[in-house]
Structures are given as structure tokens and as C-alpha cells.
Length: 74
Image (cartoon, rainbow, N blue to C red):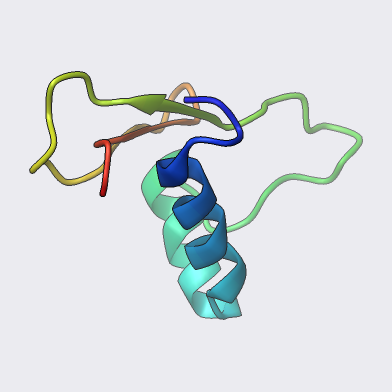
């Protein structure tokens, strides 16, 4: 994905509309925890990548690597 991809734009629109509890659940899905560590210890960046050739799939995550895989939504 790039930052101007329609799927990424929709992703950020949904993420910014989430309430605090929903954001915690999102973090748990993507990272395996409900909160991020203090900035002093935070070195990871979330990666969002495509689920290639999968348009009807649900999002997937790899919590060990802070990776979110999204289908190409229309």
C-alpha cells in the first residue's frame, strides 16, 4: 500500500473515528496488547500490508511483528 491508496485512506478514517475502547481492541488484535509502551521504550512501528489476491478475506495480524494485513477493499 501507499499513503494515497483508497484502502489506507478508509483504514485511517475508520481508525480516527474509533472510541478509546475500540482502539484498545484494535491494538490487541494487531499487537497483542491494549496499550503501547512508554515512548522511551517504543521502537516498533506498525506495518500495514496487502493480503495479495484476497478481496473477500478478513484482516489478519502478526502480533509478534506488529503487522496488519488488509485485503484490498473497494
